[in-house]
Length: 233
Image (tube, rainbow, N blue to C red; front, side, top):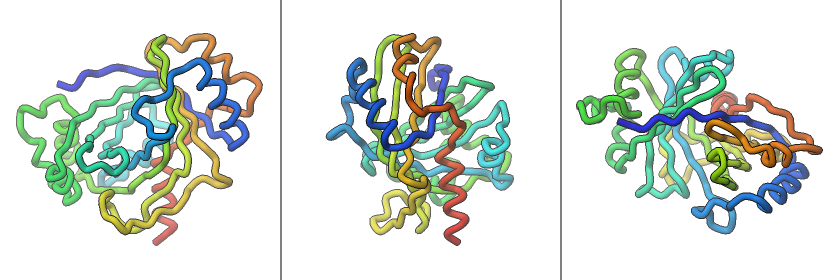
């Protein structure tokens, strides 16, 4: 059974000037993500949605309870693939994750969710995905790709991320295809700042946001990329 940890999440849409100010502030008091190379790493996610487009519509309409499924890879490394189920309840959410092999990824790409039908996947992201497919037939929806810069601190288990060069794949749904075409979705190279924490956010982290143009906004990379994909057809 996947461990569930409820977390708070605050998002901001910021410009390049605000980014440079805030990265200096966060970098001075928080640890840089140790997995990043030269400060950044690439995140690529294949999102799934059902025949009713529930994930898209629930997010767009601000539903208090919603979920979505995605397959995520870092640096497009086929040896590090995860299925993630992201669930939102009111103002907090949690995420389940199931590690995938490349073969399992290929089967999900072909809409074969039966790989998660066994009891060993009960109460996991895979088992939940199989149940959702049985109820409303899931299928690949869009690939979201971006570069991420991340900072962490132990107090409150805070994680701060700057996501930049956000783009939608307009050439299909296989993340590992070598000739994929991507199209940017943020005007003027805007950046998405996300702050995630468990039970509390330390006051000094909140204070780092003062004096800059950063207003909480319910910006969704999934929605932006889904809209771009539709425009490309």
